Image (cartoon, rainbow, N blue to C red; front, top):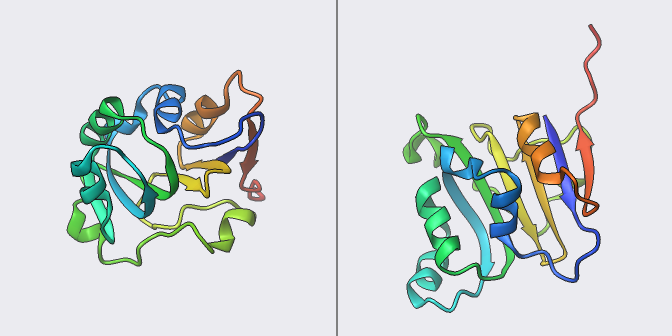
Length: 158
């Protein structure tokens, strides 16, 4: 498992569309649980939907929302699940959160939700964390970029 911290060279880190571009739209292959959201879309339907304890949506729904309005995300945890995992399974566990979660800064890097394959976290507009069981997604998120610091779990002894 690897992670990347996007925190260099920009004033604000709120552009989810840019993250999706960097990971080559891999978000479309997952269902998403959005939690701990603080965001301010102009579209009142988006605002109402996101102003909840959690939001469950497909990768295509999330992509469509961002394509219609790539609004700022102040705080948010996007937990991505294989499409075979249903919402009821996901909600049996504690909801992921960003503000105050200390394990983002510890090694080995890990995803909060045990069933998630990827986690994208917007942290107070100051950085974006990309953590994934897929090394390719993390590498894609930082490829040709000076904006990121890579983090990885220590290798296990053979």
